[in-house]
Length: 84
Image 1: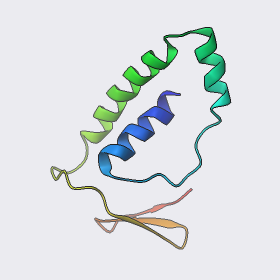
Image 2 (image 1 turned 90 degrees about the vertical axis):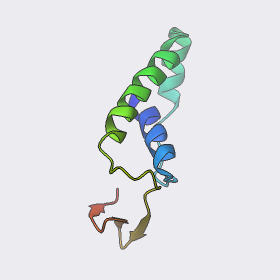
Image 3 (image 1 turned 90 degrees about the horizontal axis):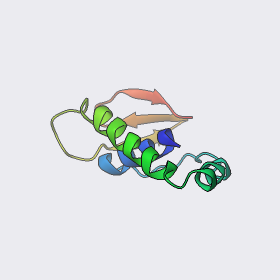
Image 4 (image 1 turned 30 degrees about the horizontal axis):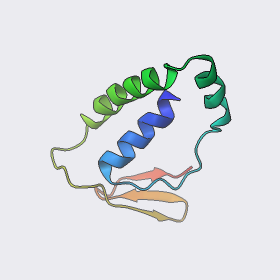
């Protein structure tokens, strides 16, 4: 749950529209039904994780430009990472 929320926070901060299917949210429902504060704790942890990850980005606050090309994601600084 924390990883999925972190992913959403990071993508939103970088201006990236996610295109990869996300986790099975059915398992989230089980956790939230058993603990009504679980989502609050997960969101808090995700916010901290996103802040940590975003601290490594370049100084520019411009959104990251990315294009999917032949199964690879090509980002604006010309680094290439494999798309999943």
